[in-house]
Image 1 (cartoon, helix red, strand yellow):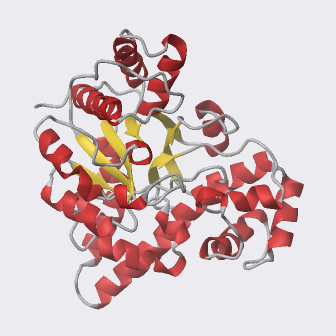
Image 2: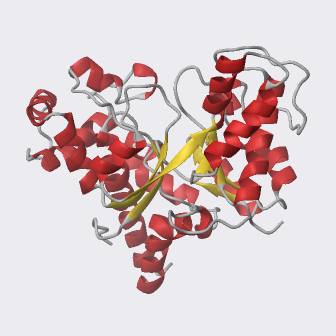
Length: 366
C-alpha cells in the first residue's frame, strides 16, 4: 500500500524546532542523540533522500548542496515547508526543553493544524524549587503548579528514566526534605513526582507519557527498559490512568508485551523510525507482533530540525505501507482491514486517548 499525505497523522509527541539558521556543525549535532549526529548515517541518508525534494532539490542531493539550499531559504521557510509536508493534522508538543526552540504558538503558526501542550513534570518541579528552594512548602507548591499546567494540557510527561531510571520507588508520600537541586535526581522525590502525575492524569483524563529506551548519553540505557515499570503499571491498572511508553527502542518488544498484558498501556516508536533507516519496517513489524493495534500510536519525536518531524511521518508511512503489502500478499489481512488499521494507528488511537481542544474533559471512571 502506498500511504500518502492524505493519510493524516496525529503526532502525539514532538518538540519545537531551533529558531535560528544553522551551520553544518549545528545541523549535524541535531541529527543524532548526544550531539553525535552526522550526515554519515542512516538518518543523514534519509535527509538527503526524502527532505531534499521538499526544498526543491533532487533526491540524494549532496550534504553541502542541501545545507546551501537550506541557508538560502532560511529556517522559517524550511520549517514551514517540512512541517507542512508531513501531513500532520495535530501536533502535541513537549514544551519542557531549554530555550532556543519555537514555542507552542510559533510552532503552530509554522506547522499548521491543531497544537496541544505536553507538560513535563520535572521542568515544573524544578521551576518551583528554583523559586522557593527546598522548603517544606515546595511539595504543595509543586502539586499546585502541576495541576495548574495540566488544566490546559493534552498530557503530562516524565523523564524519570534520565534521572534515576524506571525502577523508581512507588510512593504517594513526599520525602521529609527536598534537596534544592537545579536538576532533580533524588529517587524518592522523583517517585513521588511520577505518582503525582499519575494521580492527576487519572483524575483529569490525561495520558501520562514516560520516556523509555534510547536517548542522550546522560541516560543509562539499561535503566530505561520499560519492563522496569511493571510494578508501577500493576499499581495504576485500575485507576483510570493511560500510560504511554515513548520511543521504546531497543526495548520495543518489551513495550509491546506490556501493552499486551496491561489494558491501560500504549506505546510508540517515535525517535527510532528516522534513525533506523530501512529497518523501520522491521521495527513496526516487531512492535505489532504482540501489541494490540489499539495500543500503538504514531509520533515523530521531532526535535530541533523540522527534517525530523517530516522524516518521522514520511518513513512511518513508507514502512507501514510496505509491511501491509507483505501482509496482503500473504493473505494475513484484507484490504478493508488494512485501511482501517492505517487510520487507527495514524490518528484514531490518539483521538481516543488525548483530549482535543474545544471539548470538555471528563474524569475517567475508576
